[in-house]
Amino acid sequence: MFGSFSATGQTGLLMAGYNVAARLADWHISALDDQPTEWRCTARVEARDGYWFEHGSAWGLRLTIGRREWRWRNVVVQADAGGVMIRGSGPPEIRSMGEVSNGQIQIRSAGNRPA
Image (cartoon, rainbow, N blue to C red):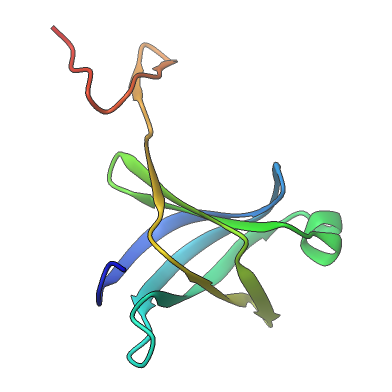
């Protein structure tokens, strides 16, 4: 589907539906060697919401890469002491993070550039 890939980053979110279950740090994501359409992500849990982390469902992953956010839905989560391993398949939905100006966030699509 999108071939082999590997990326690392510093920030991300583990979502339980529309709720933030955990803030992630020091993540690494890569395609599985034997299944190039599937991937695995490992990350350190920086902070978590006790309820959503323990009782969440409909898991989603959001990774910050530059000024973009890569998003996957319907991922599988395994937690251990201080970290998570997340597995999923397919390419991400990629969204622009917008820009910060004077303390306000300006959201615009990736195709629109400031004049």
